[in-house]
Image 1 (cartoon, one colour):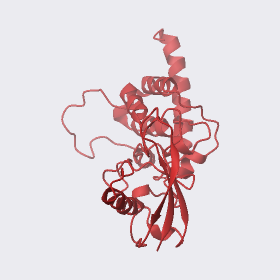
Image 2 (cartoon, helix red, strand yellow; image 1 turned 60 degrees about the vertical axis):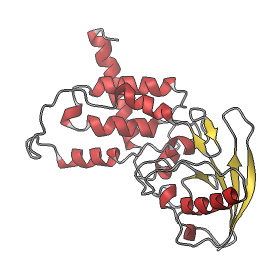
Image 3 (cartoon, one colour; image 1 turned 45 degrees about the vertical axis):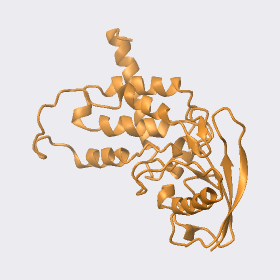
Image 4 (cartoon, one colour; image 1 turned 30 degrees about the vertical axis):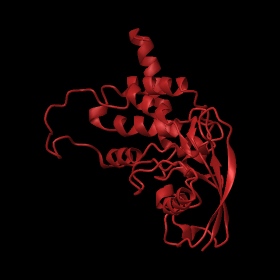
Length: 253
């Protein structure tokens, strides 16, 4: 199959950017989208041109690095699929495909399709961890946890931090990402001691990073490659409100 690409090229954060046209011939339908970009880059390098810069690592839908807007959709047309797991058979032969970086104020472009997503790391550093000394690893059945709580925690823990929720949200909100990280810890016994402080700190950091507010468009859960539910945002909001109440009551805020 043959496709035409219109790819965003930008040499640096302060440089002007533009869409450039490339022809990708002899594309196998079984190629992943990133493999197709690899082939395009090989031709560019052979011609002495700069290759297209894009993020990637595991190429197994786990690391969250493959952050691309494809035809205006985060990670492309297949729901619940990261870009690296998107295959070219999802596109028609002869299709014209527009490839852009995440578009969000909190994700400045570094080069071409690569953006700086370190804002998400700083949200994690603000409270996305358990600092309680739990000692040695206990037996798996030593801490009784309700099955429903375990399932909700594991659903939230699937978040790979790709930032698709931010890119898809009209407000550029990181609420789904932050809520997933808050929820998967707050649902388990090990995360209870810091539950409300965690919500306060991570939400405060999210606001400090210039992400937009959540107004329940729902685009985030549609774009999420792990299909994390916006129900986690409800839980985050509840923990944030409770945390503020507790903090005011004990004078720690």
